[in-house]
Length: 70
Image 1 (cartoon, rainbow, N blue to C red):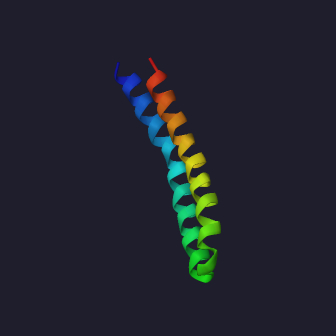
Image 2 (image 1 turned 45 degrees about the horizontal axis):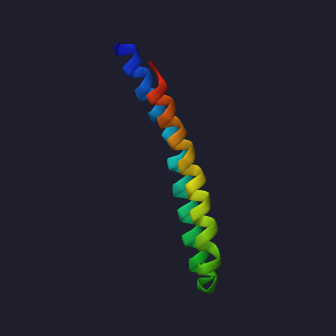
Image 3 (image 1 turned 90 degrees about the horizontal axis):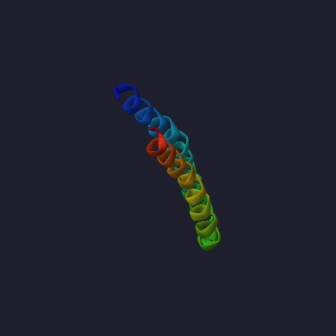
């Protein structure tokens, strides 16, 4: 039982590090781009949101894996 809980914790913990770093970098680069060219904010927003959603999907997959460990 204890090793199962450890495995679940490690699965979600390690599985969420990559998406967290990716979303941070996506947001930082989008803000940097908007800061350099404010007129392009509309063109940057949608791809930024899509990229963040795809990165977040990886974290959701890690959560699903953590819940599926028995």
